[in-house]
Each structure stands twice: as structure tokens, then as C-alpha cells.
Length: 158
Image (cartoon, rainbow, N blue to C red; front, side):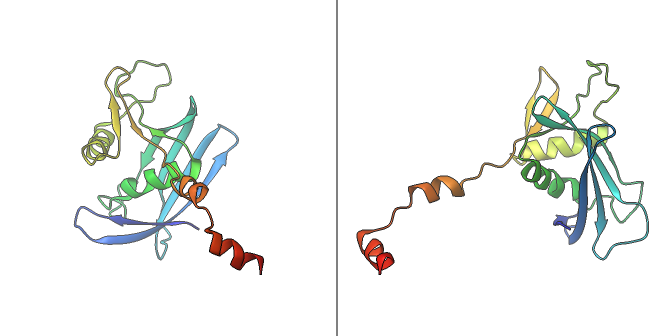
């Protein structure tokens, strides 16, 4: 089970574990987060919907439980999911411009604005949507450029 390290509003780091799975009934990607060690109560839940090659956050809930509130879970979870899904994560729009009935809450505005302020997200005013870009794998180009020196080639042939 993957884990994330979250820094809360109190500046304390905490470890959380999460499970994620594709929900084939409605096409969403459902994520459940629990503290480490886990508790018997409800999980912090996040639901993503596929949209134009990206994943849109459809809902986030911490059930009003102190174990999840202001613990920084969303700031660690969004980058982890972007890497896991190899896709951009986008917010829902604040405006009700579409007919999905999904819209960004004031709480969601707050964390997206913080991500933008930290340089981790961008904002498209026309669409009224924030975007967290998927991580770029920078190891591959470095490996492609690596070449063996003539001495290494001779050593490897022995």
C-alpha cells in the first residue's frame, strides 16, 4: 500500500497510506486514505473522473474528522496520483458552466490557490480550472545520453 508524508497546518509531518482503484461501475478512480497505523473509522476520500486525457477531482471528503482535517493530505496526494496515473490532475470549475453538477467548493479553492502560489499548479481563468501537471520523467533522457567510455567498453568485454 503506497504511503504519503503530509505536513499539517501545525507543521507536523504524518504518514498516511492510501488505496486506489478504478471503479468500473461509474468510471471514476476512487482513493481512500488512512493514517498509519490505520483507524477503524471512515477514510479520507477522493474521487477522480477522466476528462480529456486528464483526471478531474470530482469530490474530496474528510468526514469532518480531526485525523484528516488540516493535515496536508491533499498536497501530498495530488502529486502522488498525478505520478501514479501519469496524467494531469485538474480541479472542477467554480462556475457551473457545464451540466455535470460538479463544481469547486470554497475549501477546494483554498488548497488550489496554495498549490498555485507554491508554483505546483496553474490556473486557466477562461475555463476557471486549476491544473497540477503530471511529473516529467527526467531520468530517461539522462540515461539515453549516457555512453560508455572506451575503457568501460573494454572492461565490459572481458
